[in-house]
Image 1 (cartoon, helix red, strand yellow):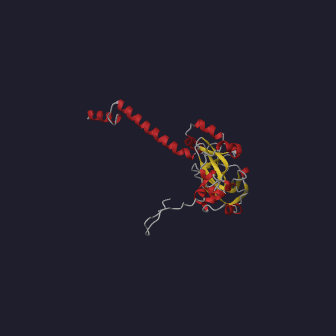
Image 2 (image 1 turned 90 degrees about the vertical axis):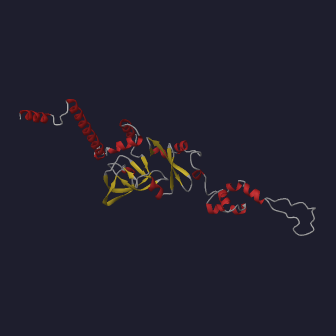
Image 3 (image 1 turned 45 degrees about the vertical axis):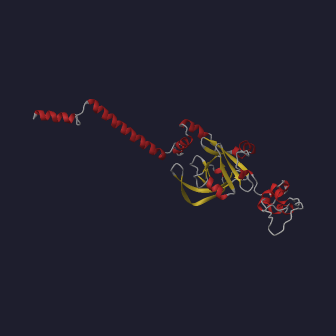
Length: 292
């Protein structure tokens, strides 16, 4: 019985009956598992915490993940944003503005509307307004969110509510007027994001980014020139195409001065065939085939 008691006591002291080295390894395994679980919980809760400034802390990590940079670089990247800078967001359904001073035609909502922010938080919107980025670019029904950190420009809403087009390139994006094919603004690529700021609407800045080789031919060429309509209407004469100015609201007929190779080849006079000395004695003895 004593041996059994001693055996029972030993089993209580070492339940798995393994050496001390094995017990040490098992404790390390438990520690590693606990650390992994704690790391996973902290990563999950990162999107739920709010910074001391009232700004969603998860946005800093979002910008850091998008730019592929460290937290130190992300901080300096965030401070370079001014309150009038806009991020071109192809995933946003509405424009979001943090600067109340930029809004005009402000309308207070009778009932606050809850929206979901990119960081997963919900925010109540109490008023909306319009923003004039320039004399040619107008953002309607912008949501005012004072607790957010960035102005978001919804690409889909900009295109659907205006006669503008947006083209994205490796180093910049261009906002263009569809009717006039004129570049109105350029957004620089900064840390993986296309940013519109006060310099985006400067003509000199636009000229430094935009060149005929970078923009598509559909945006560079004027689709309403007289020469284009000359092709569309089946190559009419100059007396016909000169009346297109009244329809196209053009002040010049420069397109008519461009020579048309098709007209020269198809409408020019040809010399008559010389008199033939061949004589035939019955029909279809000699056939002339037009192989042109």
